[in-house]
Length: 121
Image (cartoon, rainbow, N blue to C red; front, top):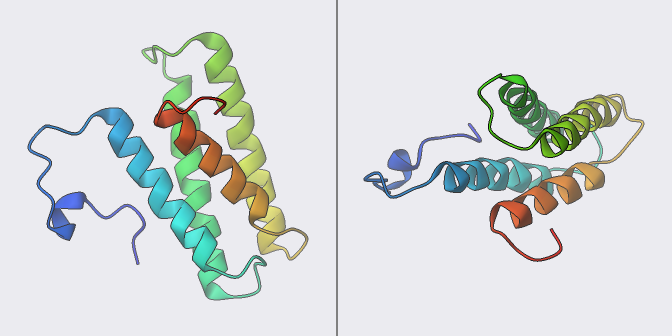
């Protein structure tokens, strides 16, 4: 199962109507769904795969944030890069059996609320 399958493969035609923010929300939603459907502990293949997808997402996000052309405010970039570091480290702890996925899910849901512009995100 690929957490970032293009929408066109699900019968949706983007037709240029989706924004970058919509795409980011969709990817976070897919990865978060994998985390929620898996066991909270990294003692099975589904959880390991979900945590790996989450790690890939946050790693890609961190690289994008570090790009010189990224237009986000410096404070926002720094905060997101810090979250990325936590997500990767915590994911490693989940896979080692020393933590559960709940904090990863909570962070992703918070990011999703922010991408939707919800108050208090």
